[in-house]
Image (cartoon, rainbow, N blue to C red; front, side):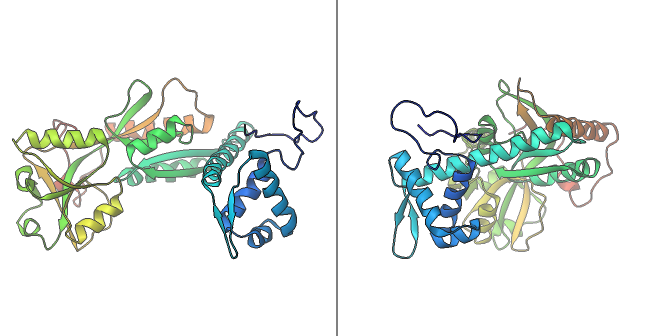
Length: 342
């Protein structure tokens, strides 16, 4: 069993059985040694990075392998290679070190004028653009607060939140209302993204009826609930989508559509215009994407995270009471309140 010690244990009595030397027992220092070697895949370079000599570092890693009863590296003539056990330990060590850093920040925030770190998860698409203004404004009020931002699909972010690696997140609805508290923060239309050379891109107007996408190879999100919703959307007009690829990554969407591999069905995204890609709002019937700010239900947040959530809620209330003027660049893509969420 792997044991991670948060204190120096060299003076404590060893448990019965095979003794474990202080050099073998896993602590943050030894995890740092292992992770540095795993990143450099070379003992000499790792030792230089750690400002220590190479032989003691090699001995630390060998002692760790002896303790775990397995090799962590395959030692080649010129470089090292992580074994399967080494890959697993590296992944877990990274999580442990991340949690340790966050714990230090949370404790620091108790004694400072609201300081600490917030782990913020943002769904691909417009999630980063929605949250950017919040981060900027909050940082101006609380300059000692930092953010650790994770991007991915809604399912990826929810999984990381369930494991304690994300404090608060912007994801796409639907979401697990039993285990998450959510506040709607934005609604956007679903768009068709295609190569500007595609025949459908050359049709007049910035909208396209769903029926025009029947028979076209489609690139859609890989979230299971989203795939099912898109199938139901097509079924509502008596059709079936032709799915070429599933991907949660917006960069994949851009690359595939730019090369005319297919047409992407993706939420409206605030991004720099790409002259090689044409974007049209899907209509007849139109559907909306709802973005939601979520946190784990019935779990106490740190003070700094709680303040951030309240800050966002205040902004949303202010926007509700005093709506901003129309943005001409996005006016054609606004979603009426009566449009159903996909």
